[in-house]
Structures are given as C-alpha cells and as structure tokens.
Image 1 (cartoon, rainbow, N blue to C red):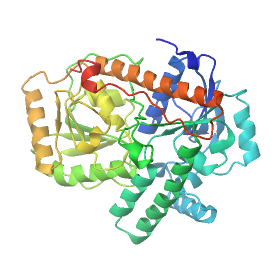
Image 2: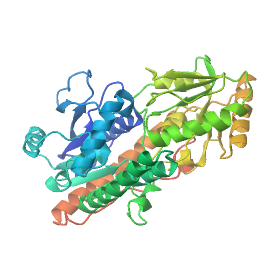
Image 3: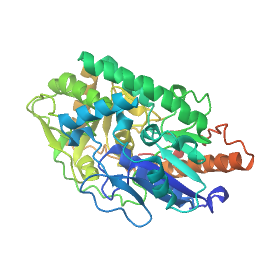
Image 4: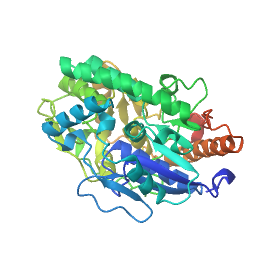
Length: 421
C-alpha cells in the first residue's frame, strides 16, 4: 500500500460518539472502522476518542475513553428517552447531541489533549461537535458527514404519525441544519459518504465522497452451499430511515411472496417489530453479519429514504450476493453488478425477489466473487482520503484555515474499477 507524502507525519484525533469495537454493533461503527483503517494505511497516526457502551470492554491502548454512556434508542427505556428530550429542550440542542453532553469543556479538553501533539481533528459525524460546539474551531478539522442529518430528520417529521413526534423531528431538522452549515464552514476538509449528499450540505458541484470498503483485511469465505433462508434483510432498525424501509417491505412486499419463501430479518429494533406474514422471521442482532448475508439465497435492500451511503448495499456487493434493491438503496453506486435487480413498486420488488430465489433454488450460479469490488473500493477510499489530507495540509501551510478546502478524489465508476462478478 502506497503511503502518501501528505500523511507521513500527521497525527489526527478521530472524535466520534462511540469508540470502535472489535464486533461493531451498527453500520455507523462499521463505517468508522473502515475510515480509521484507511487513514492508518496511509501512514496517519490516528487516536480514536469517544464514549463506550455500558458493559463494553475498556478502551484499548492508544484510545481516549470519554466514559460509559448509553445513547442508542433501542437499548434504553421510555423514561430515558423522555429525559433526553427534556435535556435537549432545556439546552437548545438537538436530541441526538443532548444525549452526549455531561462533560465540562475543561474536562473534555484535558482528556483529548492526553493524545499528545495533534495536527488536527477528524470530527466524525455531527453529534459530538453539536454537543460540544467549541470543537468546530478548537483545532483544524476534517468533517466526515455520514448523512445529511437535517434532511433525514425532515423526512422523519413528514412520516411521523403523532403530532408530538412530528414537532420534535421538525425541531431536530432545524437545529441540525444550522449545525451542519457551521461545521462545513469551519472545516478545512469536508467528506461525505455519498455524492448525493453534497447538495444537501451546500458543498457545490465538486465530488466529496468516501467510497467505503468494509471487508478489506477480512478473509473472503468460500461459499459452503448452506442456505438458511431464501431472503435476508439486515440493518439497524432502531434508526428511523431504516425502519421506514423495513415497514414498507413487510407491509407491501412480503405479502406478495409465496408462502413457502422464507424471509429472515436481522437487526436490533427500538420497540417491537412490525406485524408480518407467517413466512417472515425476526432474528434480532446476529453475531456474524457476514455469515447471515452469505447463508441467504438473495438479499433485499429495501431502503425508502434517508441520506448517506447504505452500508448493507456495499457489504452485499462485496460478498458477491444476488440482491433486489430500491433506487434509494443505491446512493453512491455508479454501476450495478449483473446479479442485482432494481425495483421501486412493491409488486416489481416481490417479482424480482421470486425470480432470483427460484433461479438459485434451481442451482443456477447467481452468486459472484466480491473480492475485486472490495479491493477497488478500498483503493478508491485511500485516494479520496489522501486527496483530503493534501488539501488539509495545504490549507494549513497557506494559512487559509477559515476557508474550507472541501476536496475528495473522484472515484472511478464501479464498472471501471473492477470486474465485479
């Protein structure tokens, strides 16, 4: 792996709401691990900093532990959620940021400075700098926008069925839009995970995306031929945009499937799962997401909203899996593998699933080898981060820190990166 000159002696503090874990529990954490690993491949010294889930292992050497904090909707009681809302209303912060407050500025700075001399911060997602606004200008920064958070909140407000929930999401959208604008203006470099998000953040016409590679360094398992379900879905269903897609699938697609076509849905819920036909099974969080995906005949990518990249889409392609996807599930994807079908209407989505499952049952080879795709993604991610690091260093040398040099290398279309299948 080539080391880029701009990155050789650089030390960045990677500040996120949660410290990385050996077994990531959400797509957000999987993306974080991929980005940190890519920085390190480029020769950057990275010090992660963030909170730990209650009961999680202690921080590893070289990490900064900000304390134990439960911040996930799916893991807490209604009373805790009500306290978060009350805290947000009292502080004027978004609810997603109010969850993280509690450290004083002096205490937080002292903990972060224990990393030693820093060239800058990677502000990973909006939540930490929204909770602690001084972070936007405390050090030179790179802002990684995982989503256009205010647009997702606005979608949630439009989809809400209760007046209180609708008002809270509308408030969240208004506050997050201001936070995102401030972070983009203050950062030397801004990266998004999807080209489609650049307009939502006001970043102009230049590309800013980080093509994610999730399985670099992880052995590609040979197909053992074991199939435990016909159709698999996996995601973090406690996140409202994901839940919208799941509810759509269960209500409008699953009833159109043959009764003998089995569906397994993996992932954690905030509250009970939706009512579903008898051939649909909810299996909760699985310890090995890769194994769950590979033991399905076909993967359903039923995204219906939200922003940012769909990590389950990337992982499905890296595994070479046949899939049916909505157009929204393909954000940031320039060309489709030959074993992926696109459908938006429920009847079309169900028909495409049936066709792929029946082909696999007949013994047709519809599963590909995703290693080339994963390697190409990893190389594109390295190029994009390297371009950002060069802009970051150049902005510092020319004393233009107040002007964001939002740069990201243009990644080649997927069709040109590798023979995907």
